[in-house]
Image (cartoon, helix red, strand yellow):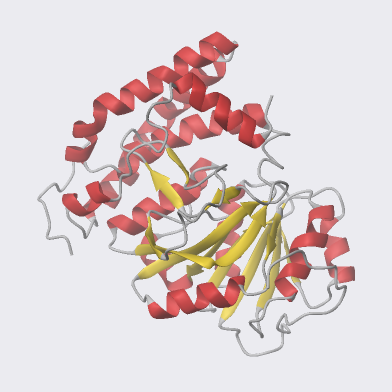
Length: 366
């Protein structure tokens, strides 16, 4: 793993009733809208009845609305065209993975200045988009912006206030599962934004590249956010941009795949994005964290899945190292700045087993 390691200088809220056929989505024949919204959907026909009205109810007018249908078999595309004729539908034909589907959405909206990427299990407050557009307007060095997201089912609990990454390589949503007790009322920089409910500067994709399609799903936004930081971009948090997320709506149905992809992709992020000196410095905590997951998996009878994830890392290693070389060769910030974005574990007294149980509980997994 060779790097160019010379240290550089550190340079009104609430649910929205369905409104069939109404809203402020821009017509496809209009001039290119400044802001586009891309909703990622896979077999979520009933969820579209929540997310699309909340997009159409936004206080920001003239927004392009695109539904990226990732191989649905439940009639989602037809339902969307019939109920919201002003919404565009991009049918991908088959499920190609979250990362690839997000890239298709970004590519389709490349002429807009900003693009909001949304999961289909999200509801937006009416001012969500306007708030985040203002933030990116005010911070031209920011590649993305995110807001305060609550748990859809337990609305006094937070679902996230921006992503963090710890020295051991574990990434999570800041505030996940915590009460909204005033700790996250200040806007400011965060490590990255969750691509399920965030606004991106479209031009940043030309510099940073798209989401890594080898990830398929999960952690692809963490990887992109880390690469953005390495290129000198920032991510911003705005508490006035409020949303609600059905946390675990997909994960509950696909826990084994979620668990496998999380473990594999977490290691891939570390290999790709950690500069060599930082990787060496934190290697003991990285190895300890991975070992803890293996021990916990063995206790639960899930060791084979964890080993399969690590084996997949080995299979992808040549391609991952090639990506690493390109990423590190174009790094434009110093090591001190990168070290500063690594956040001490918010639950540092937890064992790996306790952390795993907490994650399962939050996601409603078995």
